[in-house]
Image 1 (tube, rainbow, N blue to C red):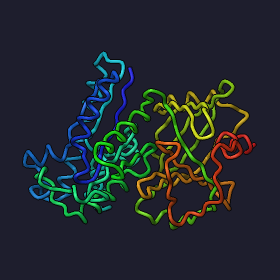
Image 2: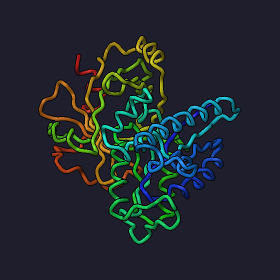
Image 3: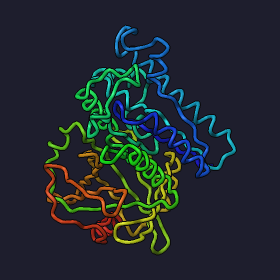
Image 4: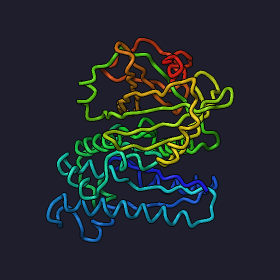
Length: 363
């Protein structure tokens, strides 16, 4: 059995409701049992529980977060009783969406109430797909008529969209679907991104890599659309031509764990299969480490810029340079680079700058 939990989120009037029916039809045809976790805020507000009926916004957010997490737990529990080989749990918004409706003090209070942490809430989903509001790039289609809970002006909708993207920035698999095409093509691009993540028909990763000058860390950490993540990566014994690794990923003592295998197709495209591990599984797999390579320890800055998701890796043994990567949905996709990042040159396909090569050279 394969159970995958993803989030579909987005700003006001982004097409999220329509997207759910597209996902249902497309992935049912691909052999998935598709389960939908309904949007929690809509359920509560429809039942009379709202920020303006509760004592404070924090009181409402505590109720919403608790219900959100409990619903997801029950859907996962139900999924494990089913006989389907492939189950896709689609969350209509996830736990981190709530952060966009709170200030930092309020969010800290909600975290304390739930006993959760940011790594757990954000990275508890396998992938996150953000649909950009029509207020950004498709203003003539922005409307509040079809949703009585939607009150935002175009300016407010655009600002909220930015907050939602920022809330999810730092997730290992965040994809932003913009309004650069018509609405039907936007839905098709969403389906293509989900299919690519699920490995339908092949689990391809299309990635470009750049050598950059050592970035201004203080500047990166000041950006609302940038998040720091600590990574420890260990390579395992693997057949010739294949790369197998385990990874610890998180911040402030809170971590999640992954097992990944990669096989190169060409300089830019690889077949990649990844699965989540428990801490005990991760520790057990460390016993099969490739002793010809050291662990890689690096600080990763995840940065969203113009609907692209950049990952900047800072290594402790380099003081003058760093590596920046971006995953793409097409080998010919155009890239606008973040302001403040100085590109030295593209190093896509250069073995010298692969993580596995770097791990070997550290010896």
